[in-house]
Image (cartoon, rainbow, N blue to C red; front, top):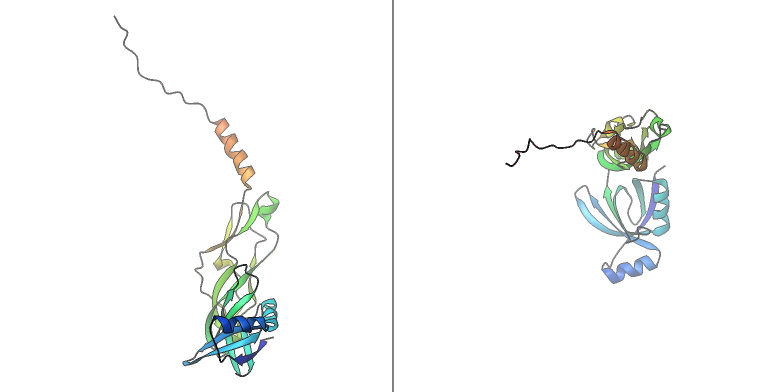
Length: 207
């Protein structure tokens, strides 16, 4: 289900006007794309929070402007808690767009049962698909991942019609030994190595 944002046009811009806007419960936004003029807008903060909960990428704009748009960027506060600004781009639901979506890791790795730790190298991946078919996330099954093995972007479960933009050889998850275990192995290996004593050549005796 596509989220709907009730937008209003902003007549005033600037830091003071933006601050008053946020205090009133609205978030500033800009709408651009398709060769049309850029519009300064505002959207209710509660609708943006709902959009975040749904992990939405495409939205229907209602109110002052009726458009289909894609959320291209969000500016956050220094603590990463509140959204301060939205960048929206006009789209046609059938056109191809490049977008970043989250990776959903699932499964119980064999390597974890072997004593390893699952590490996620990347939490997002860039894909290309129709604006109307942007998936909420892309799955990655780690069940068969053994200790010392890794999975790349090429192993992601891409839905039909979705192309991978991120290089296929990008490592997105791997299972490695815990540091303590690795340190013990290194110590044991060092202890098992024979001591090598360097000896010089024969020494001439003094008369």
